Image 1 (cartoon, rainbow, N blue to C red):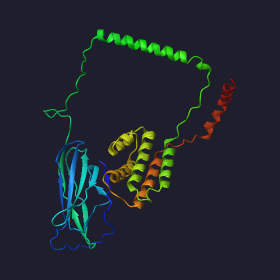
Image 2 (image 1 turned 180 degrees about the horizontal axis):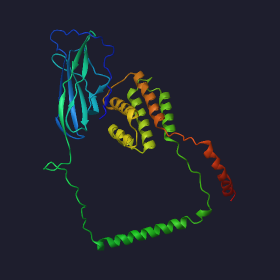
Image 3 (image 1 turned 60 degrees about the vertical axis):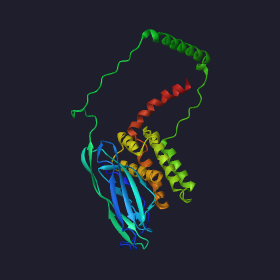
Image 4 (image 1 turned 90 degrees about the vertical axis):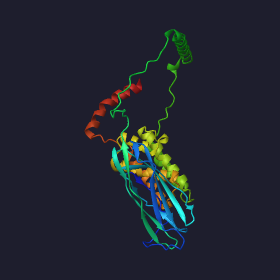
Length: 332
């Protein structure tokens, strides 16, 4: 299973590699990790809670790239620090899932506590073993058989009046349409509006978003909501994947089903997860990092847009035989 990438913004930038000074009476930086369950079925969710105790005036710097394979990250939320008698407690909640059977492990990952004096204390979470069980088993451990069709009790005597009414309504509607549409053969057809290609609409929307100046005004969340909706609309129009109504994991599964895979699927995963973290986890990346999302969005559109098929010149010679027939039809 491919590693799911989780993007978390550093709360403090440029921390040097030194141990911070802890004032007397304040807590020593420490991390406590827990999970709500160690037994799940395939696709079920497990919540991992990371509590970081640190002195007042310090902050927690989360990693900006995190791999928890074989688990996939469905959501992440950093809660505001809670004051205690000795300092602060900052909590991170991760919602994970796994699709591998058997005993799998949530791996450790590292984080840092940055003190008021710019000193850094490295910490590491605990690893947890989680058992992933299959679904659809009966009491004996075997796969349950498919149930037969259910029979529906019905009486044709009760249905007959409704069938007669339905047929009469259909005949009446056909008569009315025929009467109203008399002489339709002589009417000329109106112009048909041809829809624009999805990639053109998406690229124009991205250009308009760039000109809107949301990043310059500090509207980071509004920018990520808009760029996410543009790409989800493009995916829905281009691949018939109902991305606007799906979670990010469901969108990625739909893209994989239509043939998007490899590095391109990883780019879609990185884009959707970064947008989700800003929209739902209250993370705030820098304007420069947010601006990179426009480049990634344009790349996703350009690499999945339909391509023109080049026809050899020898094949074009056959088109000359079609022109007289086309001209005859136009004259007729």
